Length: 142
Image 1 (cartoon, rainbow, N blue to C red):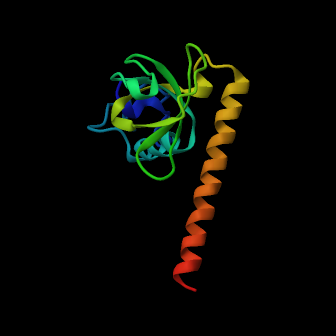
Image 2: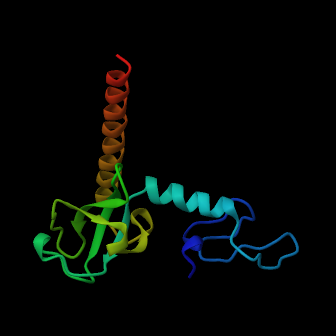
Image 3: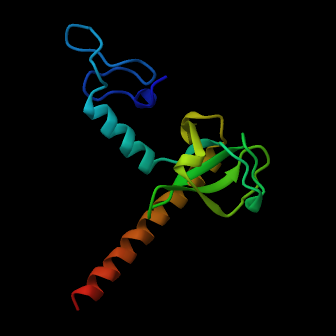
């Protein structure tokens, strides 16, 4: 499955997992830009399950571990909230390049209360990020 098909296409209404189509029903040369935009937005705003590509012994994580993550607001990382196999919280971030997307948390077999807590964490980290940015801007123009 192409990475762009993780989400439905808002332009042609192709379902998640299905390829985009033109008005004539043919496949376009590339997925619609609206789909790429939707994918980018979803990856920045929804907790997701990722598979770790390589061992990370400093945080007691092994290649293949399934991790529940929330987007890190400051750069291209994910905050690891827990390992799904045992609930272990490594209290770390992982670069996106060291992770393989599996599914969004609400579409994966994760308990609803865990997904709710992950979403709460994500919302709080985004609010903290926005507050920090405002403090920096106020200080720069004071």
